[in-house]
Image (cartoon, helix red, strand yellow):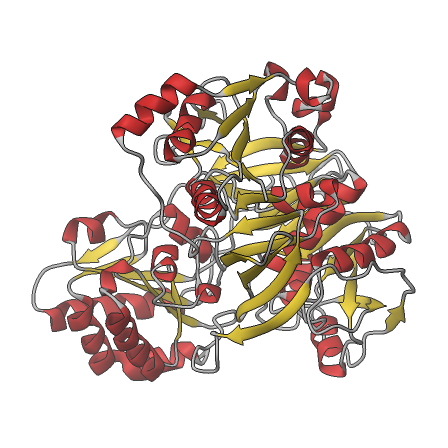
Amino acid sequence: MDWLVLVKVVPDADTVRYDPGRRALIRDGVDLFANPFDQRAVRVALDTRAPGEQVTVVSMGPPNAGEALLESLALGVDRAVLVSDPALAGSDTLVTARVLARAATRLTSDVLLAGRWSTDSETGQVGPQIATLLQRPYVSAARRLARRGNDGLEVEADTETGAARYRIPVPAVVSIGEKIAKLLKPTDAAREAASRRGVERWSLAEVGLAPDQVGEGGSPTIVGRLREVAPTRSPRCFEDGPVAERATQALAAARELVRRPKVALEPLTTARNEPSAGVEFLAFVSDARGGLSTSGERIVAEIRRSVPRARISVGWVGREPTPPEREALGREGASEVRWVEHRAERIEDAVAAAGVSELLLRNSALMGLVFDAGEFGRAVAGRVAASHGLGLTGDAVGLDVEPDGTLAFWKPAFGGGILAEVRSRTRPALATLRPGPSRSATVGAVSDVPVTRVAATLPAPRLEFLGESVELDDDWRSPADARLVVAVGLGVGGPDGVAAVRSIAASWGAAVVATRKVVDAGWVPRQLQVGLTGQSLEPDLAILVGASARPNHLIGFRRAGTILAVNADPATARSSPVDLAIAGRWDEVLPELTRQGRAWLRDVAAGAG
């Protein structure tokens, strides 16, 4: 088997600056480096290949991106190719997928690997789009990959509750998750040798595309305004006196803040255009098991909250929706479930995408087609977009209708410090959506949403499902609608620290989530990650414990009523963009909060704070 790895060259998110006057990113002088998730894929290919098998990396980017690709050559890759052309500037993910798919056809490979994310845009959609264009099976978020003979792989991949195992034939496309491997660093001698070998450079013509097929002009989506998500919270820090005194002051201040009326988020558009009641959305809300996804009803609620008068239909591929599932969807405003029957223990993304395509072809009036932003939803959305040439916004955190009637989605980028407005030139506009939680019935309880069965010819499965394991068991409470949430960072010290925080949080009735680094360390299940590449929550009170309160964390608490941070470093506590901060050791502060305020914290968790 020969291996091809997609490597995106990205800017350093910490050094990219935002010019509010021009509403643009300033990239001058910004260092470029190979996306670390793609570098993990490089290591997997190098570790898994057999003697005589070739490993090639390919990238699309500006001319100076070639320097970053030398790292892969220094690690032992046989060949590095950079597709670079001025016409490519402004290309969206679908155009990028088309370019890389064309390059892949020139570079023989049996296994195509890519990182699950990129650090600058976090869409996770190029992988399934390329798999669709190349007509290959696809598995996302692999945490383990092993070869099975010369014509197959066995892959263990992250799921909503744990992990699933598959046997997958080659040629195939696999996206690599964070847990699968550690990054490698080449020696200075290897770097020098790589510089002498150099990177091959291909023009646009060499991949068989014309200038009008790429770039901003050839892309189905365009980026509009950029918004700096500057912290609007003014931190009040408690750092003087005994721990008990600091806890007393912080609890008194928290009580006042939690009691205040919740301030609505600033509208993402400067002028709202309320569409007519004839506007229609389709929300695909079934999961890989053929049931309602964990965010399903919240996606419907998010659309209803943003576009109140729209008609919202639900797309569903799997078993027939149950009465409780229909009631949950109806409560949030769904008018109908359009059901494509497919009974399988685990539904492949390509099969689900074929079902969604059938629903799409039967309704040409759709304004928007929205998917769950989990692994399965991303894969299905990417396949549908590639199959139909539709614009897809990945990982959106909001949507709105512009004054001209255009549907716009907003998504975080560059570490969560920027929100980018993305519009689609196609109709319907597609997006994967990270919804906020639903708080109550937005329309009124509906006892039975009608189900319309839709006949569709679905492709035969190509993956062999081998079983799954559950990691997010009943011991971990779902944070989706929690009023009180405790978020742990690396500052808790390790698994024992997490266990101690969980015990305290349980006594308050709080849900526990974690930053990505804590999840990467294996201390907390990945399904409980909050922030830029995790969940987006709306608690009345969020308590950050040992977390740095960086924008990529706080984007997950953008809708939180009050944020209280506990950090041992007084300087970090003072500068955190939160409402309240206590400088002190968490293992001293949290017991004191419990001693003084457990009854009130339990009231907050119950929605009576």
